[in-house]
Structure formats: structure tokens, C-alpha cells
Length: 258
Image 1 (cartoon, rainbow, N blue to C red):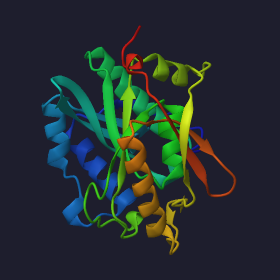
Image 2: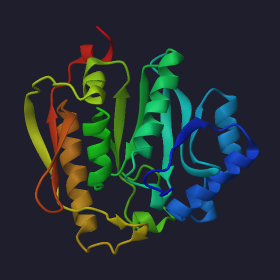
Image 3: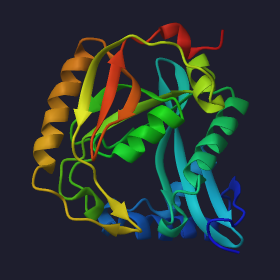
Image 4: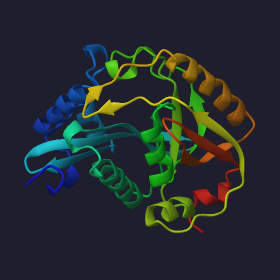
């Protein structure tokens, strides 16, 4: 059976051996030095304190996982999805979506309506998936969130991150997941991304010299837009290696089921 057609099973990670497989997959994807590796014991702690450790299995092989830890903001619990990894040869087969939907199902079953995570504003593929496939919104930007990274994937750039908010039971998210017609949002501003990090078949591509300039431009534009109360609601791919974040006013009532 080929990798593209192989049946994938999503299930909770529970054993130490399975957690060790997560660490091995993490290292193969990000190629971190020891300083940045999330160790096996963190997976064990996440399980013990009510977090989420979901694995994607192709037969006996772990080919993806998602790790979330519980958080508390304004007296309300939520999950922070810290890592999602898929083996290079299993990418573009919907495994990331399967893992996110498993996180959503588990969270809602426990009465939790929000999952957050961070993502690189330069990565168009991730941005499209988060915003257009899952229905996440964005209204926060943190410069150099993790500090200097030891992963070659991050190219020695500051680890600037957008914060995705996935309001699991909102009409907004349900419409995206079901492929239904979305509300006609009024877009007040667009922020264009003109650089894409590429990862072809698991081989990292050289960073263009303009990468830092592009990142600093996004940092300024997002900081201004979010300070003005705007929210990323949609994401549009443009020609070539460019796309635009589309920002408007977010309806707070969308956070809860009507």
C-alpha cells in the first residue's frame, strides 16, 4: 500500500515508547539541537495534567503527532497547541487536518471552546491552512516569541509569530469546516506576504536575502493593524510566491454558539 493511500489512524499517545517516537519525529522534522528539543517527559506531563497528545499512525509507524498543553486566561481554560509534526513523506495527505480535528473533538467533549497556537507569518502554506481550512482568526503578533532557534528550518531569523485563535464551536469555524458559505466580512486592510519558506520533500531550501526585510515589514504592519483593533479573518493566495492577510472587525458574538 502506498503512503498516499495508506489508512491513517488517529489515537491518543499514552505509552513511554510512543512518546519517544514523538521526540524522534520532532527531531527529524525540525532538526533541533538539544537546547530546543521538547523532551519525552514533557509529553508525559501534558498527558498527566489534562493536555492533549494525539498521534497519527500508519500501521505500527508514528507519522504525525500534535501536542497541546492546558492554559488559563481571564478565568477560562483553553488549550495551547505547541507542536504539530508530520513525517515529510506523509505530508499533503490531510494528516495535519486529521490531527487538528481530533484536538477539536477532544476539547469540545471536555467543555473547552478555544485552542490557540503560534505560526510563522512568512509561511504561506501554514497561514492558508490555519485561516482558510480551519477558520482560525488572528489578532496578536509577538516579535521573536521563542528567541533564537537552533532549527535550520528557521533560518537564523527572529522567531516572530502570529497567534491563531480557533474558537471551536463558533459559527465561523463550523462554516469553514463544513465548507459552507461564510459571512460577508468587511475587509478594512490587507497585509501582503511576498516571501515563502519552502520545504520540498523534506529538503530545506536556501533563504533569500530579503527574508529578514520581509519579516520586519510584517512586524510593523501587523503591530499597527492589531493596535487599531483589526483581526485577520481571511487569507488569499496571490500570484507567484505571494499572498495577503485580510483584516477586518471581528464580531465577539462569533466566539460562542448562538
